[in-house]
Image 1 (cartoon, rainbow, N blue to C red):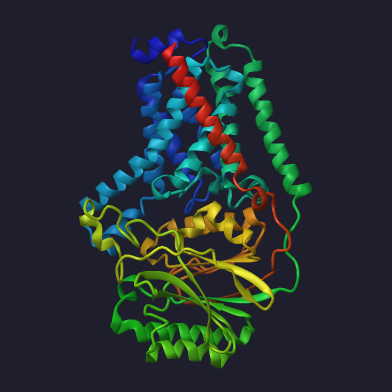
Image 2: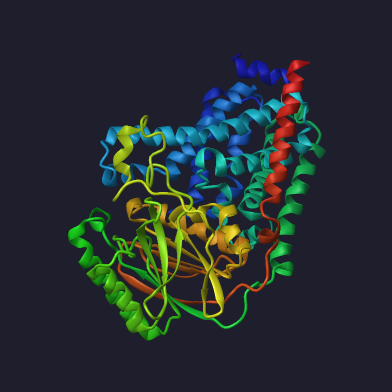
Length: 526
């Protein structure tokens, strides 16, 4: 009998599985969860995807559980964010081998959270003697806390949080307006753990199965959680928007990333955006939105190209939100968005605050000197300070640049400052033809639900989209095409519970995690 079997014998009602079976279960779990995300979009699988992982953890030691959790997390991230290789080889000009190593390092770090989750859960069962009936609830709390930590630790990388898998599920995604995307993740883990408990109970020998109430209680909790979500969506949720609709035109220039920063291509790129903008005028928009760094030159420096942009706004008489790099008064470069009035004058500016590591700056450059080329274009950018809110015909809006939109708390801050609808400008060209542009859109859509606002999105190569406060994607473009998408938004009038209280659930889970770790440390001393 192997060590796992010996440990299982010491645990009451433990499910004994061969080592190879456990390995297969955790890898399968990772792949099932990845299939719930774009480009596959099999969202309902997320309610079952973690069941194999929970089964594999049955009867293991904390150390073994950590390795199993790590393997499951690694398989998930390799399947979900494999597109990083294309970004580094095509646009970072890194050798394929080095790109593979970088992908493995990134996925390895992210898998550490899954390993920590598995270790904590099993350690609690063994050292704190957690009753089986509350294990699913504990699992949901631990998972939620660790996802929350992943959003902030080391600059944060909350890509592919489990809750995002439900962005196409109308009823489930509305839960985010109350408890954020973290609450949806917790719900999914609770259901998975409860189902895994039921399956494990049926697989154990009859004499060792344990009491059915140990299975019934978590199943009941999961059922109540799901039914409460449905009830909230059907009975309590109200559209927070109202007033006169505002027409917004979103431009998608489809500028090749390899040409984007080429000085010789600046005029041609501006020609494309001017043509798209003038074509959209017939739809009578109140605002025309250009993507991130659509103007690849300094808009505040006078030149023939900058004069063309100002003249375009003045001739059409339509305010324009234009993405452009900017040389600040402090001498730093900024990834900025400028609001031009209908007279062509600059009416406001927002500087991106949350920069992309290795994309807009290189942390610890002395150590990662070989990644310097990933900073595309003109060098490292500085960090903006203010959560700017722009005014437009009596309505207020804020802009998030690129992956700022994947940070729930930062987007909520804009709404708390008074934004009534949200704008996301981005350049997803460096993702290539992968699931990443749709993954990025899914996260943006969840911000609309959380804050009860319309969200419009202009992406250089797509996906450009209009998202309703329900999270429904009302209109979207195909990737790698030129397009001018026009849609209507209504200003937000009231606050959602999430906007008002923020990540209260996630903070509660984080406090629980701290108390849980302290309890484990105390039990070890005893």
